[in-house]
Image (cartoon, rainbow, N blue to C red; front, top):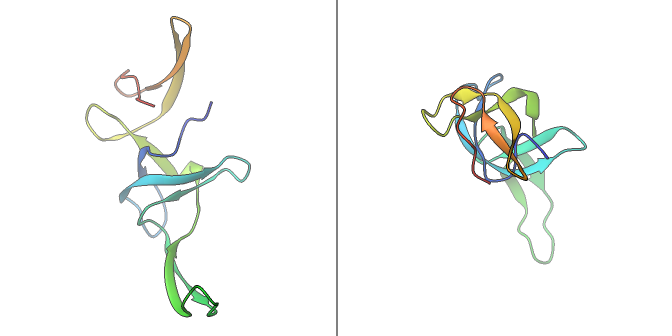
Length: 103
């Protein structure tokens, strides 16, 4: 089970986008990275193909998981994530408030 998953609301802790919030679009656990919508946007030169136009395009680059923190569902502030058993299910919870994180 991962601490940060696709669809989670996160805040960037370091770098050029520090303090900005976004939604996780993709998680790459083997690389320990995530793609966050609207965060770490870079410009790439794209060669024209039969089905895609060429030129300079902007797209999100992956950001290290250590540089993002999950937003607490209670007060929308950065929090760490913990795991606990609720009955037979293992659930994620916000260490800041103790709230269970949906998903």
